[in-house]
Image 1 (cartoon, each protein chain N blue to C red):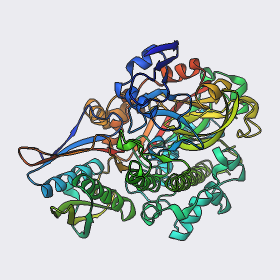
Image 2 (spheres, rainbow over the protein chains, first blue to last red; image 1 turned 45 degrees about the vertical axis):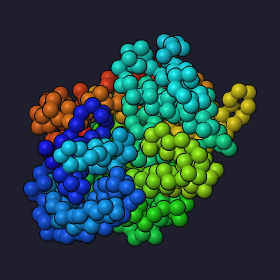
Image 3 (spheres, rainbow over the protein chains, first blue to last red; image 1 turned 180 degrees about the horizontal axis):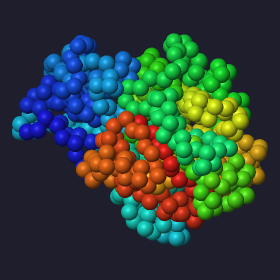
Length: 141
Length: 479
Protein backbone atom coordinates (compact mmCIF):
# COMPACT_ATOMS: atom_id res chain seq x y z
CA UNK A 1 0.00 0.00 0.00
CA UNK A 2 1.60 3.23 -1.18
CA UNK A 3 1.33 6.26 1.12
CA UNK A 4 0.15 8.29 -1.85
CA UNK A 5 0.56 8.56 -5.60
CA UNK A 6 -0.23 11.11 -8.24
CA UNK A 7 -2.71 9.72 -10.72
CA UNK A 8 -3.44 10.24 -14.39
CA UNK A 9 -6.70 10.35 -16.24
CA UNK A 10 -8.71 12.33 -13.68
CA UNK A 11 -7.56 15.85 -14.50
CA UNK A 12 -5.50 17.37 -17.27
CA UNK A 13 -4.83 20.88 -16.04
CA UNK A 14 -4.49 20.17 -12.31
CA UNK A 15 -3.05 17.56 -9.95
CA UNK A 16 -4.87 14.49 -8.64
CA UNK A 17 -3.59 12.17 -5.93
CA UNK A 18 -4.76 8.99 -4.25
CA UNK A 19 -3.68 8.61 -0.62
CA UNK A 20 -3.97 5.55 1.64
CA UNK A 21 -3.87 4.87 5.36
CA UNK A 22 -4.48 1.91 7.65
CA UNK A 23 -6.70 4.25 9.67
CA UNK A 24 -8.11 7.74 9.24
CA UNK A 25 -5.23 9.41 11.06
CA UNK A 26 -2.67 7.83 8.74
CA UNK A 27 -4.80 8.72 5.72
CA UNK A 28 -4.84 12.37 6.77
CA UNK A 29 -1.05 12.37 7.27
CA UNK A 30 -0.41 10.82 3.87
CA UNK A 31 -2.83 13.25 2.19
CA UNK A 32 -0.96 16.16 3.80
CA UNK A 33 2.35 14.75 2.55
CA UNK A 34 0.88 14.40 -0.96
CA UNK A 35 -0.26 18.02 -0.91
CA UNK A 36 3.16 19.20 0.28
CA UNK A 37 4.86 17.17 -2.47
CA UNK A 38 2.90 19.20 -5.04
CA UNK A 39 4.60 22.37 -3.84
CA UNK A 40 8.05 21.28 -2.63
CA UNK A 41 10.41 19.01 -4.57
CA UNK A 42 12.19 17.37 -1.65
CA UNK A 43 10.31 17.04 1.64
CA UNK A 44 13.50 15.90 3.37
CA UNK A 45 14.83 19.44 2.98
CA UNK A 46 12.01 20.88 5.09
CA UNK A 47 13.40 21.27 8.61
CA UNK A 48 11.02 20.69 11.47
CA UNK A 49 11.90 23.85 13.35
CA UNK A 50 8.39 25.28 13.65
CA UNK A 51 5.35 23.68 15.26
CA UNK A 52 1.78 24.63 14.37
CA UNK A 53 -1.35 23.19 15.98
CA UNK A 54 -4.47 22.61 13.92
CA UNK A 55 -7.80 21.63 15.47
CA UNK A 56 -10.85 21.28 13.26
CA UNK A 57 -14.26 19.65 13.34
CA UNK A 58 -16.70 18.93 10.51
CA UNK A 59 -19.95 17.14 9.75
CA UNK A 60 -18.25 14.16 8.06
CA UNK A 61 -14.81 12.75 7.29
CA UNK A 62 -14.73 14.03 3.70
CA UNK A 63 -15.39 17.58 4.83
CA UNK A 64 -12.78 17.18 7.58
CA UNK A 65 -10.08 16.04 5.17
CA UNK A 66 -11.02 18.82 2.74
CA UNK A 67 -10.80 21.45 5.51
CA UNK A 68 -7.52 20.09 6.89
CA UNK A 69 -5.84 20.29 3.48
CA UNK A 70 -7.32 23.77 2.97
CA UNK A 71 -5.74 24.80 6.27
CA UNK A 72 -2.31 23.72 4.98
CA UNK A 73 -2.84 25.77 1.79
CA UNK A 74 -3.85 28.72 3.96
CA UNK A 75 -0.68 28.43 6.08
CA UNK A 76 1.45 28.25 2.92
CA UNK A 77 0.14 31.68 1.80
CA UNK A 78 -0.56 33.44 5.09
CA UNK A 79 2.49 32.29 7.07
CA UNK A 80 4.68 30.98 4.22
CA UNK A 81 4.98 27.66 6.09
CA UNK A 82 5.39 24.17 4.69
CA UNK A 83 5.50 20.98 6.73
CA UNK A 84 7.21 17.61 6.46
CA UNK A 85 5.95 15.87 9.58
CA UNK A 86 2.49 15.55 11.05
CA UNK A 87 1.38 14.10 14.36
CA UNK A 88 -2.38 13.89 14.42
CA UNK A 89 -5.46 12.09 15.59
CA UNK A 90 -8.82 11.92 13.81
CA UNK A 91 -11.63 10.73 16.09
CA UNK A 92 -15.10 9.32 15.48
CA UNK A 93 -16.77 12.68 16.07
CA UNK A 94 -15.17 14.01 12.86
CA UNK A 95 -12.59 16.02 14.77
CA UNK A 96 -8.90 16.39 14.08
CA UNK A 97 -6.13 17.52 16.40
CA UNK A 98 -2.84 17.91 14.60
CA UNK A 99 0.65 19.20 15.22
CA UNK A 100 2.46 20.11 12.00
CA UNK A 101 6.26 20.35 11.96
CA UNK A 102 7.97 22.44 9.30
CA UNK A 103 9.55 25.74 8.42
CA UNK A 104 9.25 28.90 6.35
CA UNK A 105 9.60 28.60 2.59
CA UNK A 106 13.18 29.42 1.63
CA UNK A 107 13.94 29.52 -2.08
CA UNK A 108 17.67 29.10 -1.47
CA UNK A 109 17.01 25.79 0.22
CA UNK A 110 13.73 24.43 -1.11
CA UNK A 111 13.00 23.84 -4.75
CA UNK A 112 9.44 25.04 -4.97
CA UNK A 113 7.19 23.47 -7.57
CA UNK A 114 3.61 24.47 -8.34
CA UNK A 115 1.32 26.59 -6.16
CA UNK A 116 -1.85 24.85 -4.89
CA UNK A 117 -4.83 27.21 -5.13
CA UNK A 118 -7.57 25.11 -3.56
CA UNK A 119 -8.79 21.64 -2.64
CA UNK A 120 -11.59 20.95 -5.09
CA UNK A 121 -14.69 18.84 -4.54
CA UNK A 122 -14.35 17.47 -8.04
CA UNK A 123 -14.39 13.65 -7.80
CA UNK A 124 -13.37 14.00 -4.13
CA UNK A 125 -13.67 10.63 -2.42
CA UNK A 126 -12.87 9.13 0.98
CA UNK A 127 -13.70 5.43 1.20
CA UNK A 128 -13.12 2.49 3.50
CA UNK A 129 -11.03 -0.24 1.86
CA UNK A 130 -9.92 -3.72 2.94
CA UNK A 131 -6.61 -2.24 4.11
CA UNK A 132 -8.03 0.85 5.77
CA UNK A 133 -9.00 4.11 4.09
CA UNK A 134 -8.36 5.72 0.71
CA UNK A 135 -8.88 9.29 -0.49
CA UNK A 136 -8.94 10.71 -4.01
CA UNK A 137 -8.30 14.43 -4.17
CA UNK A 138 -7.85 16.97 -6.97
CA UNK A 139 -5.87 20.09 -6.14
CA UNK A 140 -6.40 23.17 -8.30
CA UNK A 141 -2.98 24.55 -9.22
CA UNK B 1 -24.02 16.02 -30.99
CA UNK B 2 -25.53 17.96 -33.87
CA UNK B 3 -23.47 20.09 -36.24
CA UNK B 4 -24.84 23.66 -36.37
CA UNK B 5 -22.16 24.83 -38.81
CA UNK B 6 -18.48 24.05 -39.47
CA UNK B 7 -17.46 25.79 -36.23
CA UNK B 8 -20.33 25.10 -33.88
CA UNK B 9 -21.74 21.85 -32.45
CA UNK B 10 -24.81 21.46 -30.28
CA UNK B 11 -25.84 18.99 -27.56
CA UNK B 12 -29.64 19.02 -27.48
CA UNK B 13 -31.48 19.58 -24.23
CA UNK B 14 -32.85 16.02 -24.36
CA UNK B 15 -29.35 14.71 -23.74
CA UNK B 16 -29.58 14.87 -19.96
CA UNK B 17 -32.42 15.09 -17.51
CA UNK B 18 -32.93 18.59 -16.21
CA UNK B 19 -31.26 20.46 -19.06
CA UNK B 20 -33.15 23.71 -19.59
CA UNK B 21 -31.28 24.78 -22.72
CA UNK B 22 -28.92 23.09 -25.19
CA UNK B 23 -25.11 23.18 -24.86
CA UNK B 24 -23.12 24.69 -27.71
CA UNK B 25 -19.46 23.95 -28.33
CA UNK B 26 -17.48 26.25 -30.64
CA UNK B 27 -14.58 24.84 -32.61
CA UNK B 28 -13.58 23.00 -35.76
CA UNK B 29 -14.46 19.31 -36.16
CA UNK B 30 -10.86 18.43 -35.22
CA UNK B 31 -10.78 20.64 -32.14
CA UNK B 32 -14.15 19.49 -30.82
CA UNK B 33 -13.14 15.90 -31.62
CA UNK B 34 -10.03 16.23 -29.44
CA UNK B 35 -11.85 17.62 -26.41
CA UNK B 36 -12.11 15.21 -23.48
CA UNK B 37 -15.63 13.86 -23.06
CA UNK B 38 -16.10 15.42 -19.63
CA UNK B 39 -16.21 18.83 -21.34
CA UNK B 40 -19.53 17.85 -22.90
CA UNK B 41 -20.88 16.41 -19.63
CA UNK B 42 -19.90 19.55 -17.75
CA UNK B 43 -21.37 21.87 -20.42
CA UNK B 44 -24.59 19.81 -20.20
CA UNK B 45 -24.60 20.08 -16.37
CA UNK B 46 -24.33 23.87 -16.61
CA UNK B 47 -27.42 23.80 -18.86
CA UNK B 48 -29.45 22.51 -15.88
CA UNK B 49 -28.80 25.57 -13.69
CA UNK B 50 -31.90 27.71 -12.99
CA UNK B 51 -32.35 30.83 -15.11
CA UNK B 52 -29.78 29.98 -17.79
CA UNK B 53 -30.50 31.87 -21.02
CA UNK B 54 -30.17 30.52 -24.58
CA UNK B 55 -27.46 27.88 -24.14
CA UNK B 56 -24.52 26.65 -22.07
CA UNK B 57 -21.47 27.54 -24.18
CA UNK B 58 -17.94 26.26 -24.51
CA UNK B 59 -15.12 28.11 -26.30
CA UNK B 60 -12.70 26.37 -28.74
CA UNK B 61 -9.99 25.95 -26.09
CA UNK B 62 -12.41 24.11 -23.80
CA UNK B 63 -11.17 21.39 -21.51
CA UNK B 64 -12.64 19.73 -18.46
CA UNK B 65 -12.68 21.70 -15.24
CA UNK B 66 -14.77 21.52 -12.07
CA UNK B 67 -18.44 22.27 -12.31
CA UNK B 68 -18.15 24.40 -15.43
CA UNK B 69 -15.73 23.33 -18.14
CA UNK B 70 -12.70 25.61 -18.60
CA UNK B 71 -13.77 27.70 -21.58
CA UNK B 72 -17.35 27.72 -20.28
CA UNK B 73 -19.61 30.73 -20.78
CA UNK B 74 -23.16 30.95 -19.42
CA UNK B 75 -25.59 33.86 -18.97
CA UNK B 76 -28.32 33.86 -16.32
CA UNK B 77 -31.42 35.97 -16.02
CA UNK B 78 -30.78 38.69 -13.48
CA UNK B 79 -34.04 38.00 -11.61
CA UNK B 80 -34.57 34.25 -12.02
CA UNK B 81 -31.03 33.03 -12.45
CA UNK B 82 -28.22 31.85 -10.20
CA UNK B 83 -24.63 32.81 -9.53
CA UNK B 84 -22.00 30.07 -9.19
CA UNK B 85 -18.39 30.32 -7.96
CA UNK B 86 -17.72 27.28 -10.17
CA UNK B 87 -18.57 29.48 -13.17
CA UNK B 88 -15.77 31.87 -12.29
CA UNK B 89 -13.09 29.53 -10.99
CA UNK B 90 -10.82 29.65 -7.95
CA UNK B 91 -8.51 32.19 -9.57
CA UNK B 92 -10.93 35.11 -9.72
CA UNK B 93 -9.97 37.56 -12.49
CA UNK B 94 -7.12 35.51 -13.75
CA UNK B 95 -6.25 37.58 -16.80
CA UNK B 96 -3.78 39.02 -19.26
CA UNK B 97 -2.05 42.36 -19.60
CA UNK B 98 -0.11 43.56 -22.66
CA UNK B 99 2.33 46.47 -22.67
CA UNK B 100 3.88 48.11 -25.73
CA UNK B 101 7.34 49.70 -26.09
CA UNK B 102 9.08 51.85 -28.69
CA UNK B 103 11.93 49.35 -28.67
CA UNK B 104 12.71 46.98 -31.51
CA UNK B 105 14.19 43.49 -31.49
CA UNK B 106 17.58 45.02 -32.37
CA UNK B 107 17.46 47.28 -29.31
CA UNK B 108 16.49 44.54 -26.89
CA UNK B 109 18.32 41.40 -28.03
CA UNK B 110 21.78 42.51 -26.78
CA UNK B 111 20.29 43.10 -23.33
CA UNK B 112 17.71 40.33 -23.17
CA UNK B 113 19.46 38.33 -20.45
CA UNK B 114 20.13 41.32 -18.25
CA UNK B 115 16.53 42.47 -18.67
CA UNK B 116 14.98 39.05 -18.03
CA UNK B 117 17.18 38.39 -14.99
CA UNK B 118 16.12 41.74 -13.55
CA UNK B 119 12.43 41.05 -14.27
CA UNK B 120 12.81 37.69 -12.54
CA UNK B 121 14.12 39.51 -9.46
CA UNK B 122 11.65 42.39 -9.40
CA UNK B 123 8.47 40.46 -10.22
CA UNK B 124 8.45 37.63 -7.66
CA UNK B 125 7.14 34.31 -8.95
CA UNK B 126 6.49 30.85 -7.58
CA UNK B 127 5.07 29.34 -4.39
CA UNK B 128 5.40 31.48 -1.27
CA UNK B 129 6.62 34.66 -2.97
CA UNK B 130 5.88 38.08 -1.47
CA UNK B 131 5.48 41.38 -3.29
CA UNK B 132 7.19 44.67 -2.47
CA UNK B 133 3.95 46.48 -1.46
CA UNK B 134 3.75 46.21 2.32
CA UNK B 135 0.24 46.75 3.65
CA UNK B 136 -1.65 46.28 6.87
CA UNK B 137 -5.03 44.53 6.80
CA UNK B 138 -7.04 47.77 6.63
CA UNK B 139 -4.97 49.07 3.74
CA UNK B 140 -5.39 45.75 1.96
CA UNK B 141 -9.17 46.02 2.38
CA UNK B 142 -8.93 49.41 0.65
CA UNK B 143 -6.99 47.87 -2.25
CA UNK B 144 -9.64 45.21 -2.86
CA UNK B 145 -12.35 47.87 -2.99
CA UNK B 146 -10.38 50.27 -5.20
CA UNK B 147 -8.38 47.93 -7.47
CA UNK B 148 -5.82 49.40 -9.87
CA UNK B 149 -7.09 52.88 -8.97
CA UNK B 150 -5.44 52.46 -5.57
CA UNK B 151 -2.15 51.56 -7.25
CA UNK B 152 -2.15 54.57 -9.57
CA UNK B 153 -3.06 56.87 -6.66
CA UNK B 154 -0.09 55.46 -4.76
CA UNK B 155 2.39 55.94 -7.57
CA UNK B 156 2.30 52.46 -9.10
CA UNK B 157 1.28 53.33 -12.64
CA UNK B 158 -0.11 55.92 -15.00
CA UNK B 159 -3.65 57.30 -15.16
CA UNK B 160 -3.95 56.08 -18.76
CA UNK B 161 -3.34 52.49 -17.61
CA UNK B 162 -6.78 52.55 -16.00
CA UNK B 163 -8.54 53.57 -19.22
CA UNK B 164 -6.91 50.60 -20.93
CA UNK B 165 -8.09 48.08 -18.34
CA UNK B 166 -11.39 46.18 -18.30
CA UNK B 167 -13.73 48.01 -15.85
CA UNK B 168 -11.03 50.75 -15.66
CA UNK B 169 -9.26 48.45 -13.21
CA UNK B 170 -11.89 48.98 -10.51
CA UNK B 171 -15.26 47.29 -10.52
CA UNK B 172 -18.05 48.98 -8.59
CA UNK B 173 -19.81 47.15 -5.78
CA UNK B 174 -16.77 45.45 -4.24
CA UNK B 175 -17.56 45.26 -0.53
CA UNK B 176 -14.70 44.19 1.74
CA UNK B 177 -17.17 43.51 4.55
CA UNK B 178 -18.00 40.30 2.65
CA UNK B 179 -14.40 39.13 2.87
CA UNK B 180 -13.13 36.76 5.56
CA UNK B 181 -10.02 37.52 7.56
CA UNK B 182 -8.53 34.31 6.20
CA UNK B 183 -8.81 35.65 2.65
CA UNK B 184 -7.12 38.90 3.67
CA UNK B 185 -4.34 37.02 5.45
CA UNK B 186 -3.72 34.85 2.41
CA UNK B 187 -3.46 37.77 0.01
CA UNK B 188 -1.82 40.41 2.18
CA UNK B 189 1.74 39.95 0.93
CA UNK B 190 0.93 38.86 -2.59
CA UNK B 191 0.27 42.11 -4.47
CA UNK B 192 2.83 42.30 -7.25
CA UNK B 193 3.48 38.56 -7.51
CA UNK B 194 2.99 36.31 -10.55
CA UNK B 195 2.10 33.00 -8.93
CA UNK B 196 3.07 29.72 -10.56
CA UNK B 197 1.78 27.02 -12.90
CA UNK B 198 0.80 28.58 -16.21
CA UNK B 199 1.34 32.12 -14.96
CA UNK B 200 4.20 33.93 -16.65
CA UNK B 201 5.73 37.15 -17.87
CA UNK B 202 7.05 37.25 -21.40
CA UNK B 203 9.06 39.57 -23.64
CA UNK B 204 7.61 39.19 -27.12
CA UNK B 205 8.42 40.13 -30.69
CA UNK B 206 5.92 41.55 -33.19
CA UNK B 207 7.24 39.91 -36.33
CA UNK B 208 6.08 41.70 -39.49
CA UNK B 209 4.80 38.51 -41.08
CA UNK B 210 2.67 37.87 -37.99
CA UNK B 211 0.62 41.06 -38.24
CA UNK B 212 -2.72 39.86 -39.56
CA UNK B 213 -4.68 43.13 -39.53
CA UNK B 214 -2.33 46.07 -39.96
CA UNK B 215 -4.98 48.76 -39.44
CA UNK B 216 -6.11 47.41 -36.06
CA UNK B 217 -2.55 46.49 -35.05
CA UNK B 218 -1.57 50.12 -35.61
CA UNK B 219 -4.59 51.40 -33.70
CA UNK B 220 -3.63 49.13 -30.76
CA UNK B 221 -0.07 50.55 -30.87
CA UNK B 222 1.85 47.75 -32.59
CA UNK B 223 4.52 48.06 -35.31
CA UNK B 224 6.81 45.66 -37.14
CA UNK B 225 9.72 44.24 -35.11
CA UNK B 226 8.48 45.92 -31.95
CA UNK B 227 9.06 44.50 -28.47
CA UNK B 228 6.01 44.06 -26.23
CA UNK B 229 5.58 42.57 -22.76
CA UNK B 230 2.72 40.21 -21.88
CA UNK B 231 1.89 38.68 -18.54
CA UNK B 232 -0.67 36.28 -17.12
CA UNK B 233 -1.73 36.14 -13.48
CA UNK B 234 -4.69 36.50 -11.14
CA UNK B 235 -5.87 37.31 -7.64
CA UNK B 236 -3.46 34.87 -5.96
CA UNK B 237 -4.28 33.26 -2.61
CA UNK B 238 -6.79 36.00 -1.85
CA UNK B 239 -9.08 35.11 -4.76
CA UNK B 240 -8.62 31.39 -4.11
CA UNK B 241 -9.80 31.85 -0.53
CA UNK B 242 -12.80 34.00 -1.55
CA UNK B 243 -13.89 31.24 -3.92
CA UNK B 244 -13.30 28.52 -1.31
CA UNK B 245 -15.21 30.40 1.42
CA UNK B 246 -18.27 31.09 -0.72
CA UNK B 247 -18.36 27.69 -2.41
CA UNK B 248 -18.74 26.23 1.06
CA UNK B 249 -21.53 28.67 1.97
CA UNK B 250 -23.40 27.79 -1.23
CA UNK B 251 -23.03 24.06 -0.57
CA UNK B 252 -24.59 24.54 2.85
CA UNK B 253 -27.73 26.25 1.53
CA UNK B 254 -28.19 25.16 -2.07
CA UNK B 255 -30.40 22.15 -1.50
CA UNK B 256 -31.77 22.86 1.98
CA UNK B 257 -32.71 26.50 1.53
CA UNK B 258 -33.11 26.97 -2.22
CA UNK B 259 -34.16 23.45 -3.35
CA UNK B 260 -31.60 23.35 -6.15
CA UNK B 261 -30.37 19.83 -6.80
CA UNK B 262 -26.61 19.40 -6.44
CA UNK B 263 -25.29 17.42 -9.43
CA UNK B 264 -21.69 18.26 -8.80
CA UNK B 265 -20.42 19.98 -5.65
CA UNK B 266 -18.27 22.26 -7.78
CA UNK B 267 -21.45 23.47 -9.49
CA UNK B 268 -22.76 24.92 -6.21
CA UNK B 269 -24.90 27.98 -6.80
CA UNK B 270 -27.50 30.22 -5.20
CA UNK B 271 -30.14 32.56 -6.62
CA UNK B 272 -28.39 35.73 -7.79
CA UNK B 273 -30.62 37.94 -5.64
CA UNK B 274 -30.36 35.80 -2.50
CA UNK B 275 -28.23 36.98 0.41
CA UNK B 276 -25.62 34.31 -0.32
CA UNK B 277 -25.63 35.18 -4.04
CA UNK B 278 -25.16 38.89 -3.45
CA UNK B 279 -22.51 38.31 -0.78
CA UNK B 280 -20.47 36.22 -3.20
CA UNK B 281 -21.01 38.75 -6.00
CA UNK B 282 -19.58 41.56 -3.80
CA UNK B 283 -16.74 39.37 -2.55
CA UNK B 284 -15.90 38.18 -6.05
CA UNK B 285 -15.67 41.82 -7.12
CA UNK B 286 -13.02 42.29 -4.40
CA UNK B 287 -11.20 39.41 -6.12
CA UNK B 288 -11.49 41.22 -9.45
CA UNK B 289 -10.03 44.36 -7.91
CA UNK B 290 -7.21 42.51 -6.15
CA UNK B 291 -6.22 41.02 -9.48
CA UNK B 292 -6.35 44.36 -11.33
CA UNK B 293 -4.18 45.81 -8.52
CA UNK B 294 -1.79 42.86 -8.77
CA UNK B 295 -1.31 43.30 -12.52
CA UNK B 296 -1.04 47.09 -12.12
CA UNK B 297 1.76 46.70 -9.58
CA UNK B 298 3.55 44.19 -11.79
CA UNK B 299 3.34 46.64 -14.71
CA UNK B 300 4.97 49.28 -12.47
CA UNK B 301 7.81 46.88 -11.69
CA UNK B 302 8.24 45.99 -15.38
CA UNK B 303 8.57 49.67 -16.26
CA UNK B 304 11.19 50.11 -13.52
CA UNK B 305 13.18 47.15 -14.85
CA UNK B 306 13.15 48.55 -18.40
CA UNK B 307 14.14 52.02 -17.11
CA UNK B 308 17.02 50.45 -15.25
CA UNK B 309 18.35 48.50 -18.22
CA UNK B 310 17.75 51.12 -20.95
CA UNK B 311 18.69 54.10 -18.73
CA UNK B 312 15.71 56.23 -19.67
CA UNK B 313 12.12 56.86 -18.55
CA UNK B 314 9.35 54.36 -19.27
CA UNK B 315 7.56 57.29 -20.98
CA UNK B 316 10.50 57.67 -23.38
CA UNK B 317 10.38 53.94 -23.99
CA UNK B 318 6.71 54.30 -25.01
CA UNK B 319 5.63 51.75 -22.39
CA UNK B 320 1.89 52.31 -22.60
CA UNK B 321 -0.43 49.55 -21.62
CA UNK B 322 -2.29 48.18 -24.65
CA UNK B 323 -4.98 46.48 -22.59
CA UNK B 324 -5.78 44.33 -19.55
CA UNK B 325 -8.54 41.76 -19.85
CA UNK B 326 -9.91 39.14 -17.47
CA UNK B 327 -10.83 35.55 -18.28
CA UNK B 328 -12.37 34.35 -14.98
CA UNK B 329 -15.37 36.54 -14.05
CA UNK B 330 -19.12 36.86 -13.56
CA UNK B 331 -20.52 40.24 -14.56
CA UNK B 332 -23.86 41.91 -15.14
CA UNK B 333 -24.10 42.91 -18.79
CA UNK B 334 -26.87 44.02 -21.15
CA UNK B 335 -27.76 42.14 -24.30
CA UNK B 336 -30.39 42.18 -27.01
CA UNK B 337 -32.05 38.75 -26.80
CA UNK B 338 -35.30 37.59 -28.40
CA UNK B 339 -36.09 41.18 -29.33
CA UNK B 340 -35.69 42.39 -25.74
CA UNK B 341 -32.97 44.31 -23.96
CA UNK B 342 -32.00 42.11 -21.00
CA UNK B 343 -29.64 42.36 -18.07
CA UNK B 344 -27.79 39.07 -17.70
CA UNK B 345 -25.20 37.70 -15.33
CA UNK B 346 -22.50 36.40 -17.67
CA UNK B 347 -20.09 33.81 -16.20
CA UNK B 348 -16.82 33.42 -18.07
CA UNK B 349 -14.57 30.66 -16.78
CA UNK B 350 -11.46 30.52 -18.90
CA UNK B 351 -13.09 32.70 -21.54
CA UNK B 352 -12.05 36.22 -22.55
CA UNK B 353 -14.45 39.11 -22.95
CA UNK B 354 -14.52 39.98 -26.64
CA UNK B 355 -16.82 42.99 -27.09
CA UNK B 356 -17.42 44.06 -30.67
CA UNK B 357 -16.88 47.47 -32.32
CA UNK B 358 -18.93 50.34 -30.92
CA UNK B 359 -19.53 48.88 -27.45
CA UNK B 360 -19.66 51.55 -24.74
CA UNK B 361 -17.30 49.65 -22.45
CA UNK B 362 -14.42 49.79 -24.94
CA UNK B 363 -11.96 52.71 -24.51
CA UNK B 364 -12.85 55.45 -27.00
CA UNK B 365 -9.56 55.17 -28.93
CA UNK B 366 -10.22 51.48 -29.61
CA UNK B 367 -14.00 51.55 -29.84
CA UNK B 368 -14.20 51.58 -33.64
CA UNK B 369 -12.08 48.41 -33.87
CA UNK B 370 -13.51 46.28 -31.08
CA UNK B 371 -12.02 45.45 -27.68
CA UNK B 372 -8.43 44.20 -27.59
CA UNK B 373 -8.42 40.50 -26.66
CA UNK B 374 -5.19 39.07 -25.24
CA UNK B 375 -4.61 35.33 -25.49
CA UNK B 376 -1.60 33.63 -23.95
CA UNK B 377 -0.21 30.57 -25.67
CA UNK B 378 2.43 28.20 -24.35
CA UNK B 379 5.91 29.58 -23.61
CA UNK B 380 7.28 28.01 -26.78
CA UNK B 381 4.67 28.72 -29.40
CA UNK B 382 3.52 32.31 -29.04
CA UNK B 383 0.48 34.32 -28.05
CA UNK B 384 -2.12 36.45 -29.79
CA UNK B 385 -3.64 39.90 -29.82
CA UNK B 386 -7.16 39.75 -31.25
CA UNK B 387 -10.11 42.11 -31.47
CA UNK B 388 -13.66 41.55 -30.30
CA UNK B 389 -16.37 41.08 -32.90
CA UNK B 390 -19.97 42.07 -33.47
CA UNK B 391 -20.80 38.38 -34.02
CA UNK B 392 -19.51 37.38 -30.58
CA UNK B 393 -22.17 39.62 -29.01
CA UNK B 394 -24.80 37.33 -30.52
CA UNK B 395 -22.97 33.99 -30.45
CA UNK B 396 -21.17 33.92 -27.11
CA UNK B 397 -22.27 36.86 -24.92
CA UNK B 398 -19.23 38.75 -26.17
CA UNK B 399 -16.68 36.04 -25.33
CA UNK B 400 -13.91 34.05 -26.97
CA UNK B 401 -11.15 31.59 -26.04
CA UNK B 402 -8.51 32.35 -23.36
CA UNK B 403 -5.49 30.21 -24.22
CA UNK B 404 -4.46 27.06 -25.93
CA UNK B 405 -5.56 24.63 -23.22
CA UNK B 406 -3.53 21.74 -21.89
CA UNK B 407 -3.61 18.41 -23.67
CA UNK B 408 -1.11 16.64 -21.42
CA UNK B 409 -1.28 16.36 -17.63
CA UNK B 410 1.51 17.88 -15.53
CA UNK B 411 2.78 14.44 -14.47
CA UNK B 412 2.82 13.27 -18.08
CA UNK B 413 4.64 16.43 -19.20
CA UNK B 414 7.29 15.89 -16.50
CA UNK B 415 7.89 12.36 -17.70
CA UNK B 416 8.11 13.51 -21.34
CA UNK B 417 10.33 16.57 -20.89
CA UNK B 418 13.45 17.30 -18.91
CA UNK B 419 13.33 20.89 -17.64
CA UNK B 420 17.06 21.54 -17.94
CA UNK B 421 17.26 20.15 -21.49
CA UNK B 422 14.13 22.06 -22.45
CA UNK B 423 15.62 25.32 -21.19
CA UNK B 424 18.77 24.72 -23.29
CA UNK B 425 16.77 23.74 -26.32
CA UNK B 426 14.57 26.82 -26.06
CA UNK B 427 17.62 29.00 -25.71
CA UNK B 428 19.07 27.56 -28.90
CA UNK B 429 15.81 28.57 -30.58
CA UNK B 430 16.11 32.13 -29.29
CA UNK B 431 13.88 31.93 -26.20
CA UNK B 432 15.61 32.74 -22.90
CA UNK B 433 13.77 31.28 -19.89
CA UNK B 434 14.14 31.99 -16.17
CA UNK B 435 12.09 29.55 -14.12
CA UNK B 436 11.72 28.87 -10.41
CA UNK B 437 12.21 25.12 -10.98
CA UNK B 438 13.09 22.77 -13.82
CA UNK B 439 10.18 20.52 -12.94
CA UNK B 440 7.79 23.47 -13.20
CA UNK B 441 9.35 24.36 -16.53
CA UNK B 442 8.89 20.85 -17.90
CA UNK B 443 5.20 20.97 -16.95
CA UNK B 444 4.76 24.02 -19.15
CA UNK B 445 6.49 22.65 -22.27
CA UNK B 446 4.88 23.73 -25.52
CA UNK B 447 4.09 20.11 -26.37
CA UNK B 448 1.87 19.84 -23.26
CA UNK B 449 -0.55 22.32 -24.82
CA UNK B 450 -2.90 22.24 -27.78
CA UNK B 451 -1.84 24.08 -30.93
CA UNK B 452 -2.64 27.74 -30.23
CA UNK B 453 -2.85 28.55 -33.95
CA UNK B 454 -5.65 26.00 -34.43
CA UNK B 455 -7.57 27.34 -31.42
CA UNK B 456 -7.29 30.96 -32.57
CA UNK B 457 -8.19 29.98 -36.12
CA UNK B 458 -11.31 28.18 -34.94
CA UNK B 459 -12.30 31.13 -32.69
CA UNK B 460 -11.88 33.43 -35.64
CA UNK B 461 -13.83 31.24 -38.08
CA UNK B 462 -16.58 30.74 -35.51
CA UNK B 463 -16.82 34.55 -35.41
CA UNK B 464 -15.89 34.94 -31.73
CA UNK B 465 -12.81 37.13 -32.30
CA UNK B 466 -10.70 38.60 -35.11
CA UNK B 467 -6.96 38.02 -35.58
CA UNK B 468 -4.76 41.12 -35.19
CA UNK B 469 -1.25 39.79 -34.53
CA UNK B 470 0.65 36.78 -33.29
CA UNK B 471 3.38 37.59 -30.78
CA UNK B 472 6.50 35.42 -30.51
CA UNK B 473 8.32 34.74 -27.24
CA UNK B 474 11.91 35.94 -26.83
CA UNK B 475 12.20 35.59 -23.07
CA UNK B 476 10.01 34.14 -20.36
CA UNK B 477 9.81 34.41 -16.58
CA UNK B 478 8.01 31.42 -15.16
CA UNK B 479 6.61 30.90 -11.69
